[in-house]
Length: 167
Image (cartoon, rainbow, N blue to C red; front, side, top):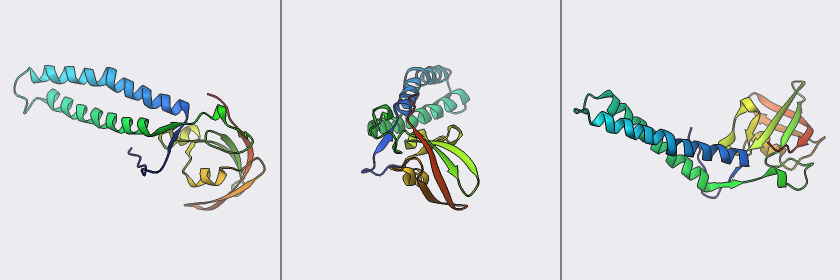
């Protein structure tokens, strides 16, 4: 999944998200890539490379790993780690906050954490700080109501709780 970031846009990320990017980088550089290089060298030593499936697959996998490493390096270089534990004004919604909302249109309570683009994971309740909902929530506090235009129509939410929980 490619994430496009204009040159002037910040790549905010939580410390946990930055650690995940670094761990993936380390895994690829220290474990996967050396293993694939070994496999390709072994396959190349077997002779004819034109019909050597191990060689062809290994070279393809090496290109995939190198492309992912290039992508990760750009994301890591652009990253601005924001530690929500050091936030001021903790009663307001800012980057890294867990926000519990009451969906007025659906009579439903939901919770989201506002995180960086590289950390987006709806199954964990993580939404990107550039999403329409997160943008509407930023700077608001408990008891405030926000309206967000969604593909299904306009949604209205009341902010029930704002918290900054260290992981």
